[in-house]
Length: 236
Image (tube, rainbow, N blue to C red; front, side):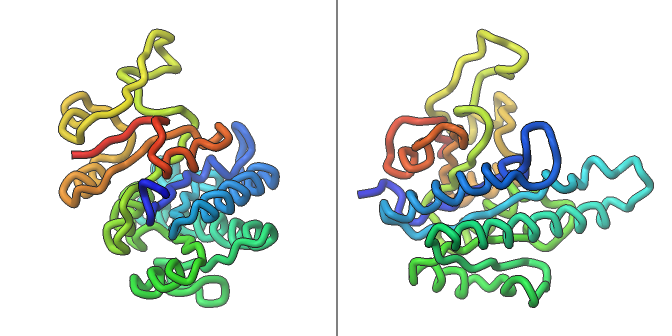
């Protein structure tokens, strides 16, 4: 039996793009779809929140003369592109999905409605959530926290390029040590930025655990949902 029965999987835009590049890498998208299929077979009810950084990052457009709110809306549209691509690839391997968007794009996605997302999950479909919170100035990390709380998830699995949270940047410090478990208070005190501060505050307030793990290691996400010791668990 899984430790977590209704997880939310947070995927950044870079999970879908080629290494160091922009756009969508078909092989990486297919690998994600197979991972999602394996997760559903545990079995669990699954929601997925996608980022859009492989198309555009709002923060990177600040100096170009594009208004910050406009840049953030562009980023939200990038998440919609990732979501509908993931939907098709998932369904090509036999996984039934629905895309729910916080921006109104009725020709390609359903409107975000909390009860609708829950109902899809109860029927065995994956609810793929796009367009963040639908508001500028909020990251998709914050959207993941918000949506997980709304639909009654019991954990956020944050899939990244590293296998957890470290006491210092492992890219800069070869002696950095991975932390297996810590509290939100410890994370705030040590300024460990595994998510943005607004997302951390939401998770802390609502007792929503976050498990950070390596998305590129086969079986990691399934193991995390089963409660096996992978990545870093952050909770109150």
